[in-house]
Amino acid sequence: MEKVISGIRPTGNLHLGNYFGAVKSFVKMQEEYNCMFFIADWHSLTTHPTPENIRTSVRTILAEYLACGIDPEKAPIYVQSDVKQVLELYLYLNMNAYLGELERVTSFKEKARKQPDNVNAGLLTYPSLMAADILVHKADKVPVGKDQEQNMEMARLFARRFNRIYNIEYFKEPESFHFNSKAVKVPGLDGSGKMGKSEGNAIYLCDDEATIKKKVMRAVTDAGPTMLNQVKPEPIENLFTLMQLVSTPDTYDYFNDQYNNMAIRYGDMKKQLAADINAFCAPIRERILEYQRNEELLARVARQGAEAAAASAEKTIREVREIIGFRN
Image (cartoon, rainbow, N blue to C red; front, top):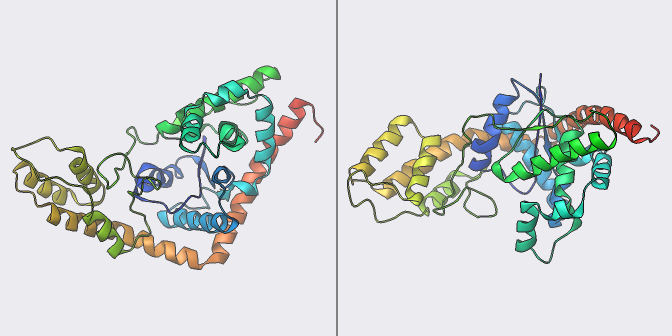
């Protein structure tokens, strides 16, 4: 069975974009692949979170993964910092990485532009750490979005380079993986772009009914269509995309017909969309609260995940040490 690895930075709660764009696929993937999912707390250090931020965010993501349906018996969930072998491989990969190629990575250049006062070595070597996360488990596939594709190419480059330097075919080249033939892009509520934490346009899985309604009712709209079967502008198309994800086909068709016939009332549509989003989120929200109250369970899941991940990583790192010439 092919091995699949995926991680998420603990930078806040999961939102609808995370769920439909990734986590929903993870739940299906755990039935068909040898999956491991991790919470990338080392990666979050580039933004200098407080110790309490890290601890709280790790527990939050762990609870939300479980609430969404990831089964740790089928797919271990571990915290990145619990698997020390990753750092050792990160060191070895950095010894074979070059400044020029790291500086050319698009995500590094964008972050350096956005935060010129915090261009740290962690940002520069982000591709090396991501490669270590993947290669330490000798993963076959990695679910990634388009924004991570260049980092995946770097991981493949580091695998090839290690093999060439030590004249051995040891690391396989991990494939970028899209579980669905068409990636789901969940739009935000601000009229353009995808849903995201930093954009401030997200609906979180833990949002209560009143919060969801308030956010949806504030969503950007226009004055309404001025001709029959008019092409929907992006802000309106975004609302219909959200409705397609959480509402029944009949509900979607009703409001789509209303729009095409120039009879749409956005207030009614938003009320229905808010109710449908709440109906979708409510059972997940309840499970999140249950898991967050059960700290003993969260600790056990993290511990068991760390044990499984460390066993996988230790085998790799012992072999890597021997290849390089170090004693085990």
